Image 1 (cartoon, rainbow, N blue to C red):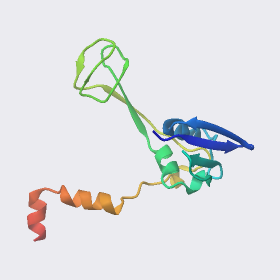
Image 2 (cartoon, rainbow, N blue to C red):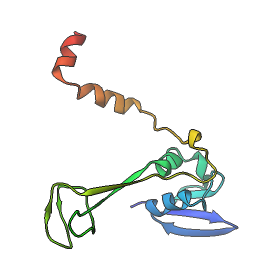
Image 3 (cartoon, rainbow, N blue to C red):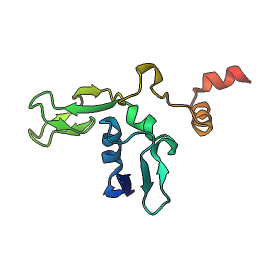
Image 4 (cartoon, one colour):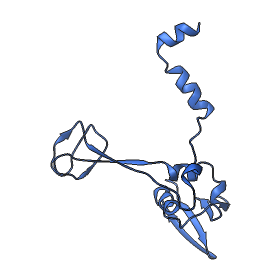
Length: 132
């Protein structure tokens, strides 16, 4: 598991998890110029770590049992509290605006070349026949 470290006011904070790092970006305690490092790497400005702010800006979805309202994994699953098998759970989508970033500036995920190749491979056979 990756461990992140943060340099703030000549003090090194960490290790913290990737999730905690994203939460600190979302609450504004880490900005583009904050120095961070992963595991034993060199220090870098957070803004230069590819995909870091894009990951923090993406929305997240949590799921809740429709019967007891406790948090559950994405269905299908069992509710740990009421022990009911769930094929559906109530989703709660949370947007994560980055402090100081205008909504129009929100990073858009870019499709990588490998994702593009993967998408081409999974197209239906009818689509492949039309290209031939």
